[in-house]
Image 1: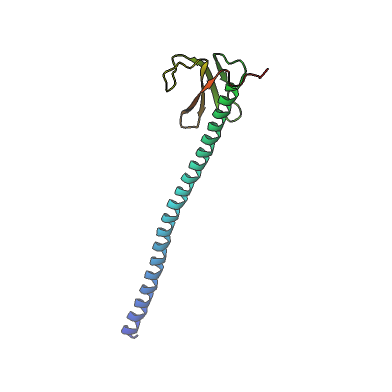
Image 2: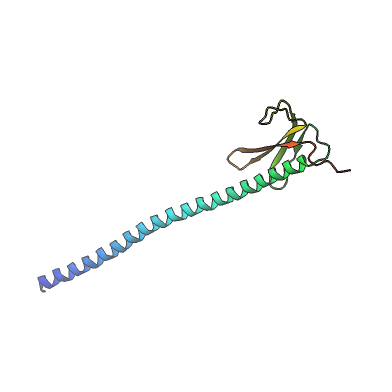
Length: 144
């Protein structure tokens, strides 16, 4: 048996093993990076869904303010709207504003503040979003 030839064969086997080890380590590093990327993409998707939900709720609040602000006989009221299929409950409050002045210091008559509030539970807690607007009571009276 030739000892130098045997050492050469063992050395070749060891180099092949190192190459396999390097491939396994590279796959492990790539897997960790891929998991981090998937987690980031998941967070981006969740943020997009939350943003879309918030936009829809804000549009609903605007619609409620318009609906209650266009009644011909505006009056003070407070109304709760039960949660629908989306799980969002609304609260609308119309209150007359007194002591409201314009730039010249004149009192503005028949002004009402319409406040709309949405409440829902997103799984991590109750969220509340509000919007309000001032409306003149005579703005939508029918013309005779």
